[in-house]
Amino acid sequence: MQHLHRSLRRDAHLKHFGRLQYSLFLKGIGLSLEECLVFWRSGFSKITDDQFNKEYRYNVRHVYGDVGGDGNRRGNGYSPFSCQKILMEHPPGPGEAHGCPYRHFSIENLTGLLQQVGIRDSEVLRGVKEDKEKQKFHLACNRFVSRPLIPQDARLTKIVFSIMSTSRRSRKLKMTGRGRPISSRQLFIRMSISSVAIY
Ligand code: SF4
Image (tube, rainbow, N blue to C red; front, top):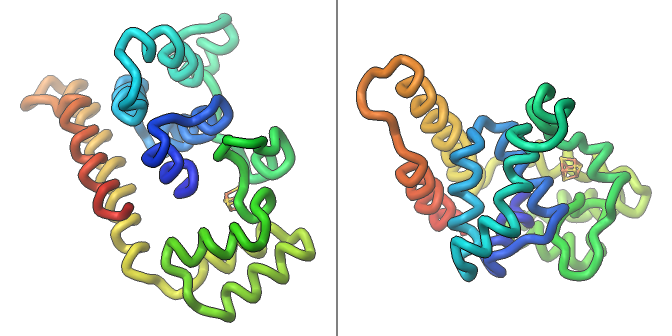
């Protein structure tokens, strides 16, 4: 997900499957449709409102079941992709940022990505390389997840909890009518500030 986020920040754009994978992640961690739309609108900073509304808004709404067929609406859209789905379906092509880095990156690019996000431990890097060569992608990922914590982890954890708690608080205030609800714009500003802090 870090790779998707970095690509979005770098290009102010993600292709279809990248948007889908990332939108479903954001939905899974608790962003409402409105908050997700604000996130994407701000992320696609090089295009006009008109272009965003014509080309991208519908797909985000579809993910949340706000539009589409009866089945999609009744089921509230799609669920976040499982690892299995990400590993097995729709391998990324040129210019695409979705997928699983442990499966879809070359070992050189994967090592470079891990080093960029602060992994310097040669044991971890060697283990990831071996697991990838044996196509044990989950094990390689687990080495990253279960490694000793580094400063970036603390910041990232704080950001995710901040997004989740802000989103929940906003919804609670809207439901109870108490206080002044946090607007999507305020939420996005908080997320943007947090993102700048780690990237
Ligand atoms: S193995 Fe890790 S990086 Fe790959 S899809 Fe699953 S959680 Fe994401």
